[in-house]
Length: 93
Image 1 (tube, helix red, strand yellow):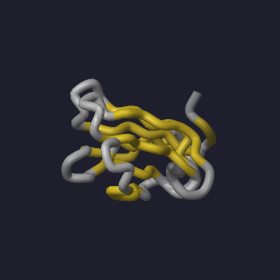
Image 2 (cartoon, rainbow, N blue to C red; image 1 turned 30 degrees about the vertical axis):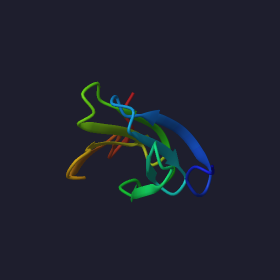
Image 3 (cartoon, helix red, strand yellow; image 1 turned 60 degrees about the horizontal axis):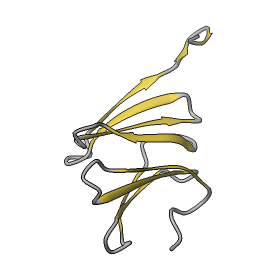
C-alpha cells in the first residue's frame, strides 16, 4: 500500500489504532487502518510536514513543518491553531 503523495516524512497511529496520519510534502494524509482508504488530506502547512503525533487521547494531532510552524488540529472537527516559530527578527531559539 502506498502512503501519502509526494514524499512521506513521518507516520503516527491514533491511540485507538483506527487511523494513521502520514506527514508528507503535500500535507497530512489520514488513512483508515482497517481498509487502507484515504480519509482526508490536511493542508494547513505552507511547506512539507516533518513530524506528526496524536495526543494520548486521540483528540488532537500535532504537526511540525518545514514552514517553521507547529499546528494543533482537532481530530474530529479539523479546526486548528498554528504557532509560528519565526519572529520578525529571525528564528526563535
